[in-house]
Amino acid sequence: MQANLVILPGDGVGPEVAAAAVEILDAVAERFGHRFDYTEQLIGGAAIDATGQPLPEATRQACEAADAVLLGAVGGPKWSDPNAPVRPEQGLLGLRAALGVYANLRPLRVHPKLAAFSPLKNERLKDVDFVVVRELTGGAYFGAKTRTDDAATDECKYTVAEIERVLHKAFAMARERGKHLTSVDKANVLETSRLWRRAATRVAAEYPDVTLEHQLVDSMAMLMLTQPSRYDVIVTENLFGDILTDEAAALAGSLGLLPSASLGQGTRGLYEPIHGSAPDIAGQGVANPLGTIASAALLLRHSLGLEDEAAAIETAIDQVLEHGPYPRDLSGQAGTAEITAAVKAALGAQGAARHVA
Image 1: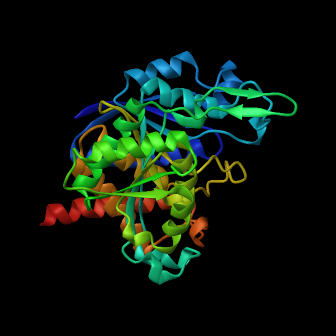
Image 2 (image 1 turned 180 degrees about the horizontal axis):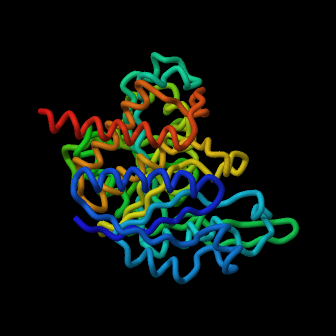
């Protein structure tokens, strides 16, 4: 297979972890006989510095023409003034809208070796394996905004079409997994959530083999930490999903481990780790690249249809988590390059074992 991929290194540790993921993609291409062509573009703070815009037109056009997009991270203290008219995060929001990627998938599986790194009791982490499907292009992040010296508003608006399309993604995923879907809202207070719950109940009729459960977001915030193994697929709106998925990172032991995939109607997607730009360690070569490498695996699976290749990366990551080396956010001493080399070696060992067999 030949595929055209856009790489958006972005800000902070973004360039370091993106380069690590590209190295692993190249190893996969060599092992499985593919060709991945890369185009690097600007986004976020780096784009503001170079062009004055967080999402330059050249970046948007390249991403729209690509088979998939891999992003490092955006943002940092240099551009953190809340009163600034142009901010790095606007580039990411604009790109999501331009690509029409309305469903953000954030899988979370707790590796047994890493249970000790979670602040939760180990017995609560057994068999934790769920996916959060977050609506990505609606809600308060994209609604009308006003601010004066003594008041501000953020409009949270959803249409039935916006809600139903992400629900269909979530139901279809639940059908392929454990056949259980938890829809999270705040229907006891918010009209948008009442619309959401009514839509979820209606769409559920099209998936009779999937059990639908409703949860209020405040109770879900507790249950996700106290009973995480009971969940399979969780679907929710933009703001709730942003908060819940960062909370869920406590289960895995580190934000640096977790990938994400943002998908729309077609196969093109936007892939990125859920961690931020970590400007305090940028340029030091110590960032954990595993979340970005795992995002590359999701890219292979969802945009290129390369399931064996995606599974090979995920197996290699599991091998590193089982045997080390470990990055600093997991109480280890290994840097970005060493972790990447370990994943690459684990990939190579798989290929050698397959050849011998």
